[in-house]
Image (cartoon, rainbow, N blue to C red; front, side):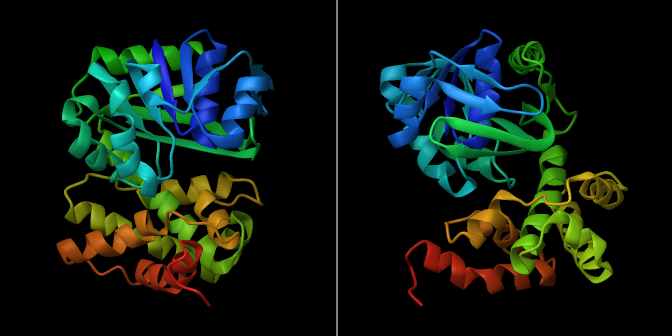
Length: 311
């Protein structure tokens, strides 16, 4: 398959590199020092599942020069999706489809509004990965998992071809029966843990250890479960229990990318996670007080990180 990775940081870089390692044609879209490092030295990946370097690596900062591809893996931050949708258009041909890997549940909607529904799948991933420096990505933990599927949940040959490509690359990939439920289940986990982690400045091990923060985390998950039900999304009856068991399996020092961005003063996915819970809750009349507290508590810091406020 001819695959473009639009946003070749931790997530996009990791999954794209695994496909390239297995022999798929992968073009990384990058810029600045990351672009130069990949062009000169390849893309290095350190992982508990084996270190490797994709070299030489195809890399470009110009989607028009890349031309049309079969698949685009979208690895930018959630708040960058609308802009990315416009920028990737030169790579979208008649049969191209995009797989968004962002946190949150609204990326497919943003992509479809620009590219059209036939070019968009739903998608999600689970992995702890980050860019150490330009050209160098480290998989820090969590067994890599990627899931995707057609927005109307019909079985498709193109989704199965991509799943098989990841299978050949040694990546756990699946096509859920209901991609929207799968995305919301991830949303329930990541928005809750990211929000509580960002407010407390504590890792997963501490949050789950203290009974009051554990209860707060469960309460945040329950708000999203109620919201999903109101939106017509059918989550498993035991989704809270399963998600808390997953939190309990995380490394003691595990943190989320949103939490790290906020702590380090960078723009984050706050509006697309906790902010989205608040906004979507208002649309359907569901109260979300925990997420509202998280969102408004962190909003001033978010605006400062984006240069909208100075204090």
